[in-house]
Image 1: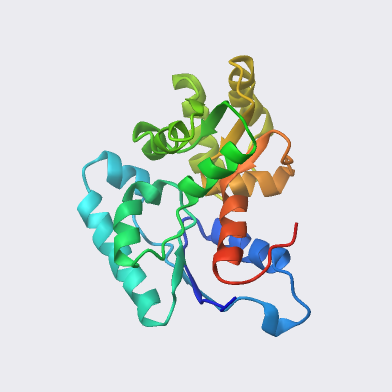
Image 2: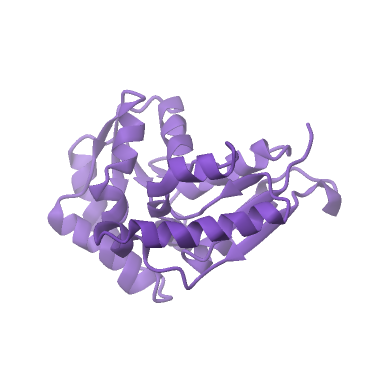
Length: 234
């Protein structure tokens, strides 16, 4: 299969971008350097907060920035594009149009993965921007999967883990995390999707395991490798 150059628009946050790159390296089947993918990473850490912009009516302002960044990656020869920020997928259709179908949609890929696991009811832990726009719910329902979000108090804890802890360079409070997961289990969720890349960082910090948790960044890793023409290591 012909190899394609991958462009990663990251920095949202930088640690999640680093983890995606590391996962791609670790999970690509290689016998030497030249078997790895060609990847260009634009870690644009100063992009305004995605949830704030989306919920406060600054979507056009945010999109103008994202559009310019993708155009830089396109101009450098990238053919597939990954954005390791779930909330940014508010603009998924715009990304897809801008890239001529080269945008790798992390939310759609994760929903497809959940369907392949034959789960019928899943919990979703994500930012307010992702939750209030029901980004995962729409994708999951298209596969016949019921979506459960944390209650108001649980969602505050999710946002605290993301913003007060992971984005601040901390490891994250495992006890607080489990306080959110427990009610989702009690409601019959067969899996919980880690639908924010800061929670993917949390997953790396604590090695939560793949039996119950579906990490969207792991799904993105595999899709990037396969779409760009390499072989994914199972």
